[in-house]
Image (tube, rainbow over all chains, first blue to last red):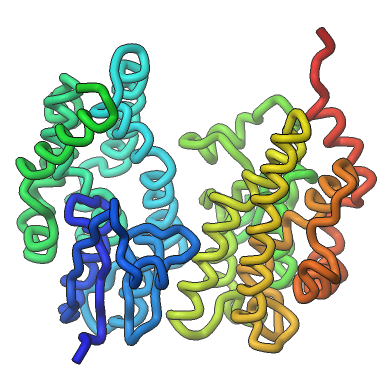
Length: 219
Length: 227
């Protein structure tokens, strides 16, 4: 019989990783299905007809789309343990702001770092480092973005960490040199079981990025 | 500033700024509306939203909250006792409301904006088709979400009504400029009735600009410099 929770995902997706982590934080048993994005399954197209994108969380047959929305949904449904969003409305608004910031800024910038060349890549690299520095500044000296506890913003950002070695290799940058506190934060998050289990091997992600570079014609 | 005073930094013509104002009105929360001058950002704005430097910003007890939809949820949660909930009661329905609000900001509004900026018949046709496709999706979403009630949120105006309804004045300006009806009784019958209810609501009326005034303003800001 089909599991109560199914996740349609794509293994290197930093967005899919958010939902995987959230489900594991809550101890939710789920069926993971990897999609071939060049040949999307009928289920994916049926469950996310508007965007046709992963991840899609299917709970008792009903789809929830958009990773940030999925994480909030998971936090609200399985509210018994490991709260992901803060309970204080102001802290909650701050957490939402930073995940929204990541969503608006990170994806385009990081794509330019490894999948473009020349002027476009140089601009992309500058933007990308700026964004990481802004996030590092927000983190400050706290162990996690929300303070003492692992939460929404950490989940929102950590998936990009598996792509860091690739950015460094193809963008010729050192993220550790630019943002040492952020690297320390990432290593701290990786100690968490839900994160370690949900993130793929960085080497595999870097190989995947190399393949994409060939596809985009920058290799 | 007194410990619980509320300010909204914004501009009368911005649909995004309308969102927190409607939310505050729905909760009967008094606030000071601090208007930005078009083309120049105030010290207060730059200090309160250093990351994006954009309006709206809500300042509550000296603490800023940024991003219009995030502000609406903040208002709903902070003044939860002062009015009906702006989000549906089940996690699933809340996820649906947030999904459509995100769709409106990421896909629908950009295509509406492109109509006003479109050059030539071909481009205009293409963008119009996009907007109409979006409207058809939102018409269906309204039927699904409202479940027979007057608003996306049910009995009372809520998060998704605000997220979409804030664009109605700009939508009317676009319709006038292009001579094309976008939301009407034929193409989008449910949305057409909802739009009227929304615009006439006492929480919305004071902050929704008159179509004529907005059309004048649009002419100014979209005016192409002569060669």
